[in-house]
Amino acid sequence: MTNLRMRDIRSKCSRAEIWLSVVTCFMLFLYAPLELLFTNQDEFWFDVYLLAPIMSLIFVGSCIASILIFSALRVWCEAAYRVAVIVYFITFICLYVQGNLLTGSLPLLDGKPIDWSLYKIEYVQSYVLWIVVTIIIVVIYRKIKYGFFENVVKIVSICMTLMFCVTLLTLALSNHGFERKPGLGVTTRNMFLMSKDTNLVILLLDAVDARNMNVILEENPEYQNIFTDFTYYQNMMGAYPATRHSIPYILSGKWYENKTEFREYEAEAYADSPLFANLEEEGWRIGLYEAELLSNDGGKNRFENILPSKRGISNKVMFIKWQIQLVGFKYAPYCLKPHTFVNLKDFNTTKIPPEGETMFTMSNSDFYDRVLEEKIQYVDQNCFRFIHINGAHAPFIYNEAMEEIAAEDGSYEDNIKASLTITKSYLNKLKEAGVYDNSAIIVMADHGYGWGDYFEQQNPIFFVKGIDEKHDFAISDAPVSYMDLQTAYERLMDGASGDQIFDWKNGEQRDRRYLFYEHSKEDRIIEYIQTGWAADTTTMYKTGVEYSR
Image (tube, rainbow, N blue to C red; front, side, top):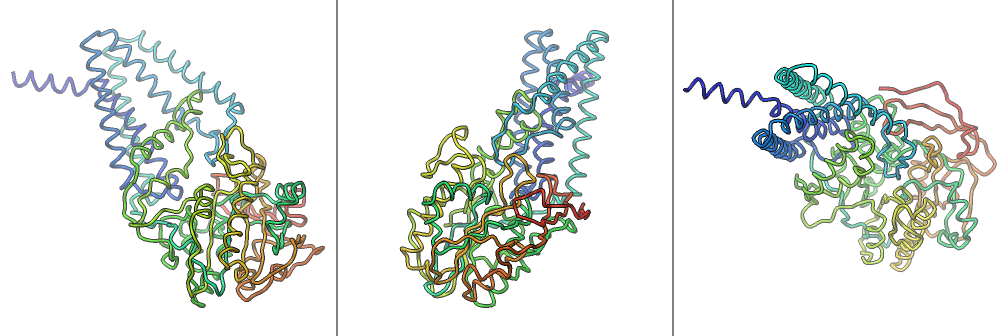
């Protein structure tokens, strides 16, 4: 009897539905989230020690539920059970192929609205995949005995599970997957703390292109009044086409050329920044309100608003929901992908803030509300404030009055106008508090906007005024570049006016460097030289130098 009972237990544990449930749930709820984390370590604030336990519970729960459903079907109707096994196996194979072999043309998750009508070929490929796999598996099932078919399903499931485990281990070892990310929280602390002596303020509006700004200023002259006392450098050349590399460069002047991992570069850039070194040497208080900083320290203890935070996830339900959506975006058939869209920046809102503090976000509305509601506080020390908000970046969910609207009703121009409304309110706040005149202020963007072409993002806006500077709105055509920023900061701190911070003047010609890469393909950076107007891509040429990893 004992031997019979043991054989019965082994028989039940070796059933195809058990291993099929294990491999499918493992792929979707453990392998996929961990693979995305390991291959995109710098995109997420959390580490494997936070992600794995939560997703393990989802894996176990879904696996048990799946096995129980199969067991109920087996008791109720053997035919229904067999159909369920076939359908489940077809689904597993198709999801695996969809999520691992047909991902090359996935839309970018950069916040911009996705026009799914551009992916007709991918829709067809997805339908063909499911039809072909279904036919093949049904034919195999009809050609062999069911018992043999179950063995095939079981062997494939076991082998795929082992492959997933080996792949995860390999990815973890090659991508610092087992490193524990330190808990640092970018808070709003002292964002409106200013000095009545001297301040240097940089308000960075994400993705505002100078070409579009020029049109808006020309068609709406009243917007020029926002920038009375400022000089607008409309021929500004950026450094990179996206935020990830632009921000560290803006604050350090240190180029990233793929010589090290980006996390090492970012840490060195902030730790060795000439700007921050000068501010510290002169005893300034430094606030860096940049939500997309990586979690490693990299000298970030010098910033008064970046504080140790408790490890953990503040909203586990939303965290799990977004993880599943992210997996679905990669693994689901194309007809379902539009329902799985997730903004990667949303994950930042699930981080537990330092005790008694509020996490800083790039949200336009969050910052705008604070501008309207909070008061300027004063301190004896000089203050530096770098504030990076979404600005004109997609999704386009604001109108000119900074009211939230549906993304399909918004436009890039609306978001720019919303950014100008925020800027006006912020500058008025500084004026009302009596700290506008004694502040050097820069309103800029990290990069421009390419109207669907990622290459055409090299011409960001750049407005600047010096301390006690007074004049009408001025425009400069000087061929300036973000390569000049470190000198410009130093001159502003020394009291220079906005038209004196660059050595280049109107009418001069100059070669300016620009490093380009495709979104999510930063392992291949291409060097360009701009010989003409910043926005003109026809006057840019490749130098033949590429930086690859």
